[in-house]
Image 1: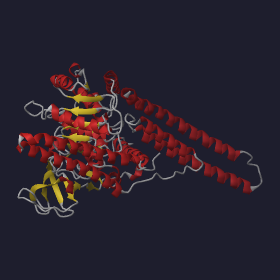
Image 2: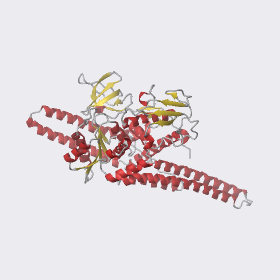
Image 3: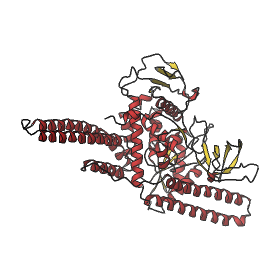
Image 4: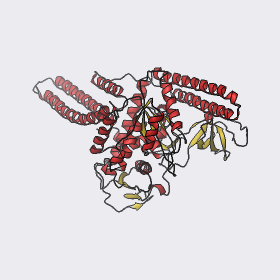
Length: 561
């Protein structure tokens, strides 16, 4: 089912291109009809009648132009939507927008929109429930390790009851969100924001005159993992977007799997100045993104200032949304890649619900975390899901290089359908194998992985392009989300905290904390920028602080047909 839906989006996109051409022809024909109406009976002596007809014809032309613009916007937006996750909802949106367009005046009743405070409160409650669970779990496990044998069964019962309460609370919060009346707004806002940034990317990457366009050459070195290389590409593309320079990519093997970043501009023509160059430089080259010096103000975790208010309302972690949509643009598949992905997904017979599990390795080659730790989180997800729906089969898609891991999972968890890419070792292209895992992981309902892994973060980032807000759809077993080339991972104190030991730090309201890690025991480690002290603090007393930068808004394309 998933495989069939996946390429249906591709076919819809192609058909919409044909619709667009037909609409342009229809518009030209309409203009011809209007002119004929004007010329008909021009010998009438009544000037008033002529003026009236001229006025009506002019109004008709304006209305046709308006509807033409609106239809083209609908088509552009829809071409960029991945319908894999919510086919029915996406088609419903399309039908609704076309119905509005065909109405007498094209008016639309505004969708019910939540306040930013309401959205934040929902996310705070969910985060607080999880952090409370981590605290209770850590404390009970510590007590159990020190308790007499006779007390351990009682502590296990308390832990199980605490988990049961936690899952019930989280299920209630999810149900509130489903029934709060804002579902249509969330979907529409997702589509509108995605369409907006996609149009800007297209405008930047396809200049009318490549020779005169300012350019940024990105050299992506292949001295690290595929995930690392792709994140370097994302960083360079964002710098190009921020400096309004068409990005020309130097990435060996990239265009064998993905489409070129531009359809009109792939040659730099002029000699390049080395980064940072000058504002007047026609071409600037970044020889190595990883060692770019000076660091660009536009690099992650910076979010475009003009998008930030809307993103903070819609999404729980705007930088992940932003990086994910850049990824979606730069990783557009070649036709042969699409065919291979389609065939693979068809053979795997993927169905929902399904949890993605990515098993990363350490430098020594061992799995960084045990199978049981991953599967404990998978069990927790399915137990919570079963509070609100019947699950006939528990499925997991596993991305792991070690075939033995798959065998162990199948034996130790016989109640699960374990799915994996069976032809990984039979394909010559390592990058293509990597993309198969990445693509499928991003389509799952929930991810269990480690954010220390580039693959885990990439899948999580791409997942944000499939749903209005998938920021809570991943459980990392080590780090919190971070971007590999970031300077800080900022949090803001939303509650006061007085330290209770030398290991802890004080927090005042609105203090900024550079987060180092979450210990997943109710406490995090970081540095308070006000006091410059490192230490522990309760994780629930801070929230993500959005770093915004004034990016160009490309306002010149908003009215381009």
